[in-house]
Amino acid sequence: MNSTGITRKLDELGRIVLPMEIRNKFNINPKDALEIFIDGDKIVLKKYEPCCIFCGNTSDNVLYHEKRVCKKCIEKLHNS
Image (tube, rainbow, N blue to C red; front, side, top):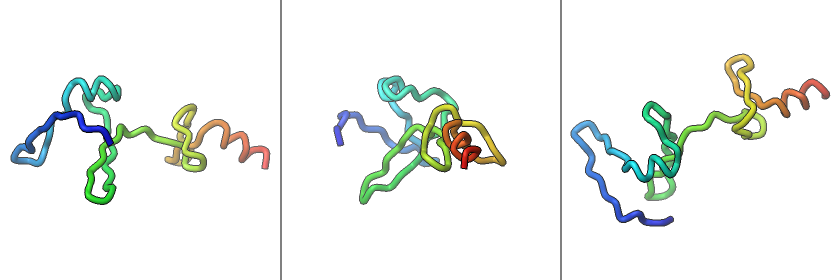
């Protein structure tokens, strides 16, 4: 894991501000959702990208009964 050398303090509500340089690097825009992970003693933030429930693909997804499924998996389901 690389250190950026940037530190931020939590406000009274437990919020932090992500520096603009980091938001730009990871294409994080206002109102984007972030996933929060725990890795041992680390907190990891990742931009949330909905993925196919079968293969994890993040592109060409459609909603099917409130679940995301990619077109390749839909084709495989139709052919089986």
